[in-house]
Amino acid sequence: MKFEVLREHFSRALSLANKAISVKASLPILQNVLLESDSGRLKVVATDLDKSIVTWVGAKIDEEGKITVPAKALYNFVNGLKEDRVVGEITGNNLKLKTAKTQAIFNGTSASEYPLLDYVVSDNHFLVNSNLLKKAVDETYFSSSVDDSSNPEWTGILLKKLDNDIHFVGLDGFRLSKKTISLSDLSTKKIDFDSVIIPAKNFLEVIRMSPNDKDIKIDVQPAKSTVVFDLDDLFFVSKILDGEFPDYDKVIPSNEVTSFTLNYEDFLNAVKLSSIFAHSNTNAIRLNVNISTNNVEVLSDDVELGSNRFEIPITEPLGEDIKVAFNAKYLLDYLNNVPSDTLSVKISGQNSPALFIPTGRTDYVHVAVPLQPYWE
Image (cartoon, rainbow, N blue to C red):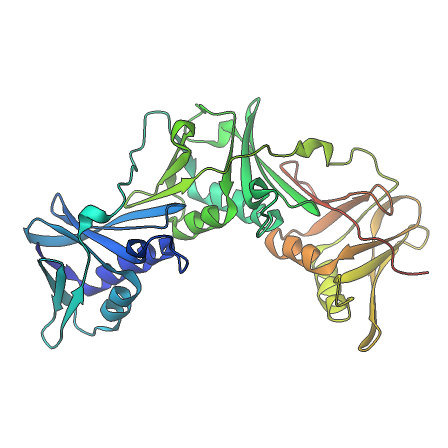
């Protein structure tokens, strides 16, 4: 194969492909990227068998062919070039790249050894605006478990069709985030699956690669245990997680003993400052809710470092005074990803889940499980 490409476009495609390269690849060839001529373009493919990325580069193709070469080294080399154009030529299992001033030969591996990938989007796909999808993932992924060998399904984001809505849900046993998208907000209203669990880390990669304000095709293929995202000039294929997702509605409390509204920025700042003095083992901070005096105190203390107290005024106070502890890091994950002007807080007990809802929104809820009281 002989080809000529713009260095900038080639570098971008290789950068995207490298996101599907795992440092713990189960097979040596999975450290490679596949280069293949495809209808007058250069196709760039990478996979770690959990996720796959397929993209294209506009190219002048003189001869057809394909090869796999080490992905990281190829990207580093191409990205470091200064010239605008790169010429490539495959000879046997070698890839020669040259510019006006530089030449390199990469030892590759036959493309016949590379896994076959199926990235065809069927007629059963649905369309969702990329901005809408980004918001749904951004507001839920942080509640998913980072690594849970006993409950691998908790490392994913659940998409569940319910009546005329799709629920996006992330949870890890200590917190839960649910974002609801109405089918009326989608470009296509037909959804051919009941529920699917997509790895949160893969979903994050998808939205980071997605263009702004463009329709994305999503094709859930249960028979193949995959979901295909068509981003126009890029396909992202992700494995679907097996397992039974918890009944998340049972986790969301329906009754509270205390509720109030407070300013989002004030609360975010209070939690940030209090986290400095939070218990090192549990990241614990305490909320003292004073209904009678219309304020909430955010407190933290550390035996070696010291203590902190931050007072915030509240509005719409209802119920009883209460003291409750939360993980400061978990609260910051929520606050940093779901900004709002004001925040509605509903506490159902000192040891019961609490609700955090951006005021005025009916499409989102965050649940935080309190820590055990650590004060006398």
